[in-house]
Image 1 (cartoon, rainbow, N blue to C red):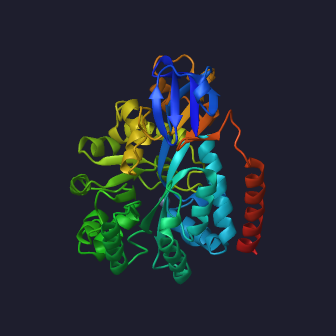
Image 2: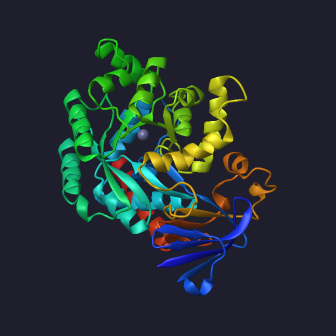
Image 3: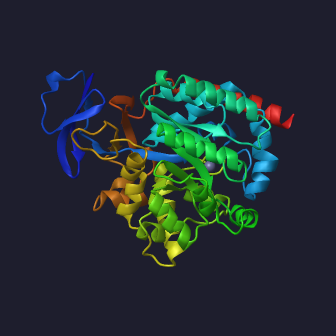
Length: 419
Ligand SMILES: [Zn+2]
């Protein structure tokens, strides 16, 4: 299977991009007769896709279900009781809805953490996206055994999954998973070379509680003593961190996932982006789930990331647009073990075509500035992931069916949760 993106703007010039299989085969003038599919790029700008490094995709079904409250009140009294009513088909259709939303907004990969992940796997396989899907663990959950069974079955059939899918081990957090579970997760991550995905130091309550329970250790120090922190670890949030924590995170090569919209909405605090980058910590970007965001747009996430980095620095000179853009694209891809995130010959063919006639992209003195501060989902026309066209001129196959089923599942969920 080969695709030719004809006469597209790339890095300020008009050119052709040739895709063979799942890789970019060449960049430069091509003979259109040699390709199976031609995509006219005349009115488009080719840019790398986004890599969303922390989300809970099935939570699209809980978008707008409960807003504007403290994290623990929100979880204990609203989200967790509703989640207890979720059925396997909700996980599947919720993820299908998330995948569609991500494709529309130019995202081709997400790092997911949620229970009963076999439904997430099926949805990702059918959507054409890439994902790392967490085998979720939560010692405090009433349905703990059921979650573990689903994850175990998924792990046993790991060799049969699409090559676009990686599995990770995903203990929810230090306040929901015990020491034994966390140690076992670290061992599994090391033994099989898989990612470990965990929420770390999201709130001041978590930070203070950890110090009280674990002899004055911060969550980062505590996780480090358990062997949890390595270059395979994705530490979602990493909001409340000390200078010493940042040194540990940099030394271990941990990827800290910045989720600024969710952190602002729940008033959890702000990851110290400028200080982390200066200390050499690997920072990537994520949206978190749609009940604390409430969308999956990496455009929104980049803009807010930049604005809050200024706030945290008390200066308009926070992180620079090039840095913000890189953590949303190339850094996310590399951290996730993908040879992608940049449009170059030989790389994986993950490409977004933007509408060059968008008002938000006009004028174009600095494309990256426009992408971070001005562009939105409406600028995305066509999305290619792993050498396949997932959206063409705004059209995704099967969209109406996904919306209809997501609405049906949400209606049943609402009745079950409030009934
Ligand atoms: Zn989260």
